[in-house]
Image 1 (cartoon, rainbow, N blue to C red):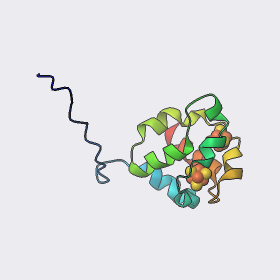
Image 2 (image 1 turned 90 degrees about the horizontal axis):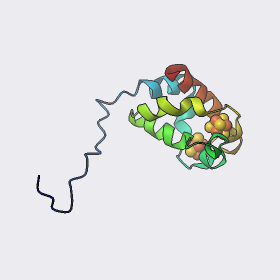
Image 3 (image 1 turned 90 degrees about the vertical axis):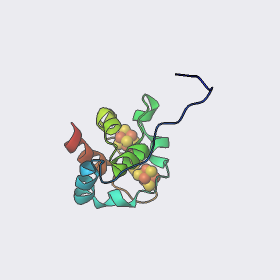
Image 4 (image 1 turned 180 degrees about the vertical axis):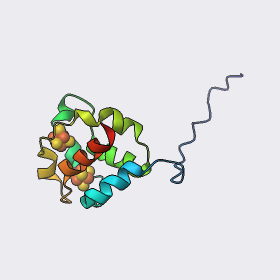
Length: 107
Ligand code: SF4
Ligand code: SF4
């Protein structure tokens, strides 16, 4: 293939009809505060697990809403359920409850 010095980026279109959003639907059903998240990132900024890993609840909630579950399944076990994120969440998301429900589906 000829190298023109640039390439066409991989398609990042999200097809909600094809992606598996069953985990998000399960969490939403059993922990409705899942819907309140505004992706502010406060939980990730204070997260105990993030001090040692790249764990980000903010990112995982976004991915689950899109039905992009792979990264969440691979990383959710890193949460220690310490509850610090719940203390700082400005929207009152029951973060530990959300994570626990995600773990029920993933681990
Ligand atoms: S702190 Fe709360 S609202 Fe902000 S990203 Fe985390 S869960 Fe969502
Ligand atoms: S409960 Fe989990 S996501 Fe929340 S601060 Fe603790 S380790 Fe981080």
